Length: 447
Image 1 (tube, rainbow, N blue to C red):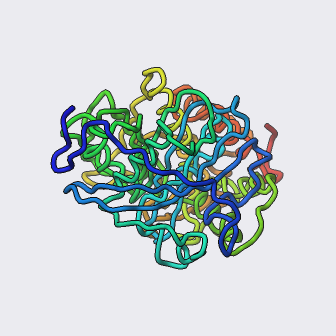
Image 2: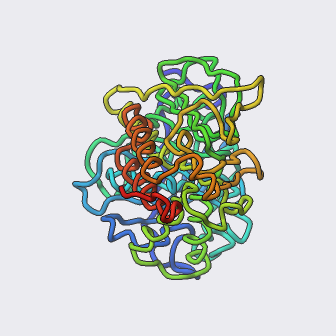
Image 3: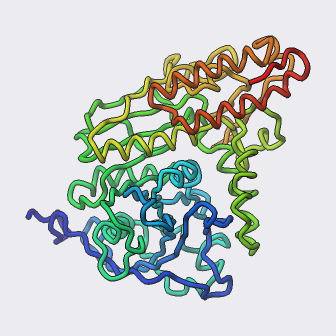
């Protein structure tokens, strides 16, 4: 085996760390920071927090001890486990941990029997703001010790190794079957995973594929060694690239913001009370929250105009779910996802239609049958939504039946193209049907 430069480590020789747990009701709070805010039992799932310890190595060969933590969400019934494990390198841009891809794809992950993991990979996620573990519960998390982000790649590899080939405590609780490990990360985490693929994956070899969401580069000096699906919003639009590669697929989702209403609403209305010490809510509370959080501008909500805290409503979650499922199939049987069409540009600027919405890219139904202006790259990271007035709606679609018919056709096309899952298509059309209230008694129709 050939050694890594300056590391003294052989190819593929990722150490197996020590996994401790599950961690129970220890500490001041008695439960993990950023655990599920609702009861998972009704979904046939359970979660457990573990501490992971070892010695990590940075690129120049320097080593340091570490202890971090993970939260594992897994099917309670082993027969439900589909063999796929998503390692979510949680985002810490706001100086607290935000599991964006877990939140966006949560419904698909549970429906399909995935296990998914909140990975505290970066130092800012561990300490030292009021929203980090060591401050939120200094007793429970007294042993956590992150030596710095220069060690994060190796820590992440070792955590992956603990799932691929567990020694001692199995963080999946002994779930049977092949384990396909998919790393996902959004924004800053996407850039971290982009660097990981280029600098670490070839020699570590413990991860099977990557969802790089909202960050990273479209250009590759050498093809990625494993499947990479690159998911971008309007905020990251640029005419440069991409490099063509059999292991790389680019999806640019027209109308989407870097962050969005779904994420903001989950954080504030769902996770906020739990962070403050509130009890877990019933399983049904999740669906009640989704009914509002899934708004794509078809009904009015005051937070659609709330800068950053909520943001644009265009449903990136549908694309995230489809991307992960397609990526898993690519790994499992070699069937690659479709290559997405590129954004359209006026010079270096993203081209926009008469409504102000993005042109080109992957066009999910609400962008081609619009009910709102998606100001997706304004207001810093979040974007804004400006729903059309009732008059504007009736000018575009004189009857709700006509609007719904167009949505049905575009939805069927998106499913056939592989960019929208059938279950999400049903969710979207249910929302489009409920929007008939916007037409009031002027030809509202039925669906």
